[in-house]
Image (tube, rainbow, N blue to C red; front, side, top):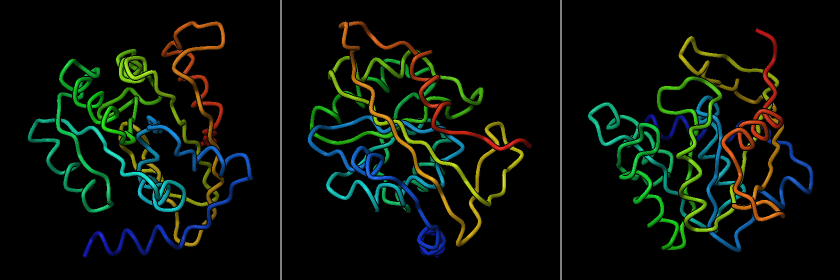
Length: 199
């Protein structure tokens, strides 16, 4: 029942994206790490349904008891949960996600989840893409009407029938100069495409 309500709710949203954003969001020639802030997770299933229909997406969920509800939620919205220690993207989580990408699947990452602080990027997030030489698809969303929860991440719940302005950026595993991307590079790029209204 909950899954049906969420699906119907999400499908009332009017996504707006220019041609370049749609092209990037639909990129499917290689496995990607799809990266979005934790407070935009409500949109994840609908983003994958609308733009990334050619690939299954796997998302990291803590192996602790606290992660059980998130694993159940992921299944409801069509994301395959990968259980592992998500704290600072430890070795267990890294190995699990590296293997998923090597099998040809996309992975979903919330670099500031599951407990924050909000809008931080842990350096361990980059290990998976470096090992697989895989690009990162950064997701940006701006809401016209939404509620924000009083949670650590100020989670967004978009109002039904509201507009969502989509943005995106694709970051390669290495820069043109062959240098590794830093956590600060990823954070800056994510902040640039995810403007927050003044509270």
